[in-house]
Length: 197
Length: 197
Image (cartoon, rainbow over all chains, first blue to last red; front, side, top):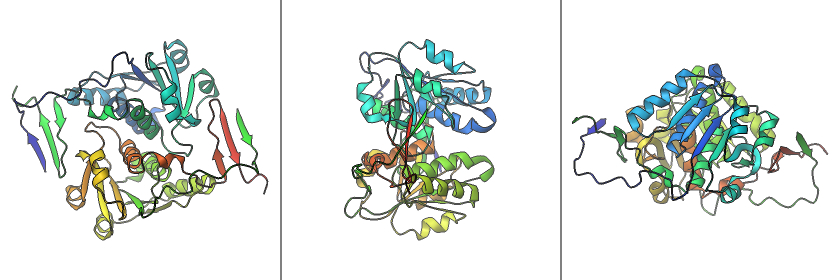
């Protein structure tokens, strides 16, 4: 059912190379409370959502080579220059970050109000916790922001925040990768641009 | 840091009791390929997102009492009548479902186009796969729909689909639960309406 579509030499230019407009600055995601034994898959989803929804980089507090490898593999096949670093002190990272610190939490103020108040001209650090978030994080953040006030998922909250931040255009970005999925109503169509090289 | 806010007898009525408008019908989420040993947390996030983003029920193919318990506990504390069933044949469930079957996949057509084409007056089954989705699912679905065409997360894709379906109003729903989070710029404020009973 997988149709491999050959490279079309005439194919049109990508609609977006970047989701950045004018003076918009970098967005980094900081994942805290990562426990490699328990959280590998959720943290991997956090990293993949960061990449797919337009963030530039992700930092994970606990060292985890396998999560790094997964993300590098996706970059290699699907493109882009999304960066991942693991094994970083979260408190020092928040303290030293030059920009606006936004903490996603179900206890925070409405993210839709926050998105219009956060300055677009400075870098943004989006902090995403696991089950228990240390109290200091609420104090160190410039904004504590919630996506609804029901318990759900940091993966969903992150996607929603980035979606509102980029106003939906993050999903139309062209990553320029070797593999390109061609949207299809039925089955799978994947363009492999390396086949003719 | 947790402030427990006492029930305010004068507090205003909820803005939304339901996210349904007029003739909008039920939305059910079907999670397929659930492996209790590997997928418990991701499937739990799928269920919590279904509930928080306005679906009425979730069905999981493999029996898993612990996921059921987690969701029932959230209902008990945070309200609503969201239903969960596990241990259901996915193929029979899709076949017998009376309504529109929408499969979320990174290979599908744009979800934003699909959301306006899917009839609002019939029930909707949103099918969410795990790593490998059987080819039949693509055939049985009325719509194969993607949230972007980069690899990311079924948790994020589900949240985004439901968000566009309900046009953002799902997050302002009042679940009428015992616990109610009061949005706060700093710290945690939780209203426990049982304290005076």
